[in-house]
Length: 205
Image 1 (spheres, rainbow, N blue to C red):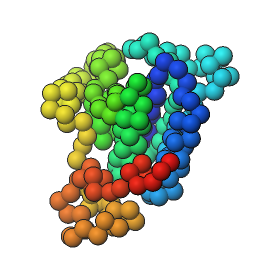
Image 2: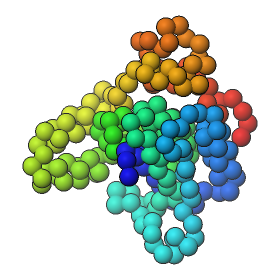
Image 3: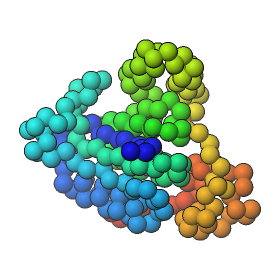
């Protein structure tokens, strides 16, 4: 399938239609405005039929059921990974009563799994422990140590994301539009994203 970021929104009740209108407006603006090299954002609500078929059951680490889910294939495009996380972080601030769980199959999130709640992230300890147990059962001790270290750095020092250089993506229209000197040299992708205005910052949705 290729490296993918998966995201699930967990909340006590389905989201109201007016909230979905806001989410869809922002999601569409993100998909149109930014450069996506594989797939773009596609958060979808769980349908009534899916609920009846129990295709989306309550998460094992929370009592709240999954109300929406999605995934974005990014392959090696770390800028697209940054965009996914920016969207999820905004969504979490919009819905402080919800939890959004994100899994990264690549290296942008070194600990692999995080939970967003009220706009703040923390390691998804339940999933990380399961992953460590899986790796340990296959004798992958170095991977267990790497994942445990990444989780500790995230939890204790707030180091959730790899600082990939923005200069590697200077050809993207949204990055070149920043008109920064030296073609983004010295900035990380996260730094560059901090200098941008996103749809939720500039228009009524």
